[in-house]
Amino acid sequence: MGTDAAMADAHGSRAADRPAREAPLRQLLRAGTRAPHEALDARLAGLAAAPTPHLYLRFLAMNHAAHAGMEPILRASALGDLSGTLTPLLAEDLSAMGQGELPVPPFKLGEPDAAEAAGLLYVLEGSRLGARYILLELRRSGAAARWPSLSTSYLEAAAARGPETVAERIERAAQSEPERRRALDAAVLAFAHFSALLDRAETEVRP
Image 1 (cartoon, rainbow, N blue to C red):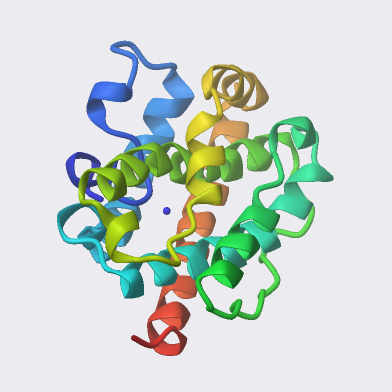
Image 2: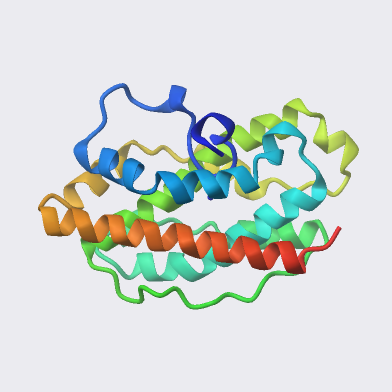
């Protein structure tokens, strides 16, 4: 789930990690989700600037609830082989750090077609790419020495994923204009879902 410079922050990938020439669909998705993406990243920018256990637990709780609701839907879609299963690692991290899971609300897009699945994957893969940056920042800040219970199973697994195949399949899944529009609508819906879950994490995950 920072502005692109800060987050790679907590949700997206850094500009330096992007290919110089992007496929048209990815340009559309990036432009069309810029506002909700940057708003979400700004709320989690402290993971890069001044990470704390409280903020990290909110990040984990948000991502667990989001992945738990979206991964099964994606696995049943035409792009199901690309969705991955990182929910158990997020649950493992939360448990290791003594934090309960948030309730998992149903995702509004229950049976996405291939184009809609492409939009959802774009958002999930962005959050996973951001994990690489967060993991580096936690290591650089010496968080493990300060937080004995720190668990980074999700960050490590997400950072190890290669986005190349996913990016190619996302592009092929939505080529016509109506398909591209459905992909964008799904991506916007996914960002709204992450934002609502962060609202809940901010209420329920206490210092």
